[in-house]
Amino acid sequence: MKSVSTAAAPKPVAAYSQAIEAGGFVFAAGQVGIDPATGELASGLSGQAERAFQNVRAILAAAEASAENIVKITIYLTDLKEFAAVNKIYEDFVGLNRPARTTVGVAALPNGALIEIDAIAVA
Image (cartoon, rainbow, N blue to C red; front, side, top):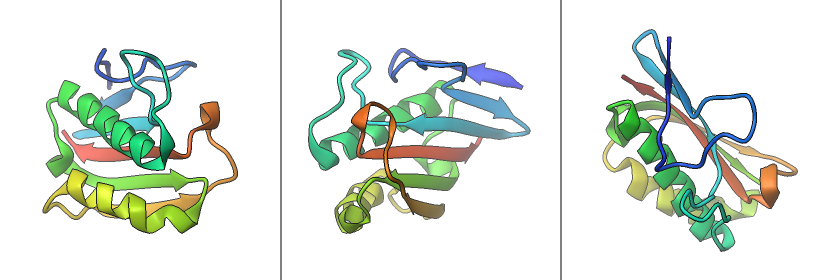
């Protein structure tokens, strides 16, 4: 088991790793739309979704993986009515890869975020 870390994604704010590489997989922790350079949450759902996907991409790159390696992704939304808008951003992120996906409606997310994304990828 190996911890994965990169300055290109927000630093963990509690006792967790950005990702763990184990058993041939990379388990990326949930990412919200925080810009790692400023520490600020991106504006609006689209901005937060794009930033959260960028954060996941950066973490996977630190583990020498990419969006093409994702086998399972989970998207947490505070408003499921925004599913269609997020789905367009998601499709751009995964490209031709079609991993298993779950989308969950939640009451709230850390720092007032509107979306959080976690992923499991083949290392």
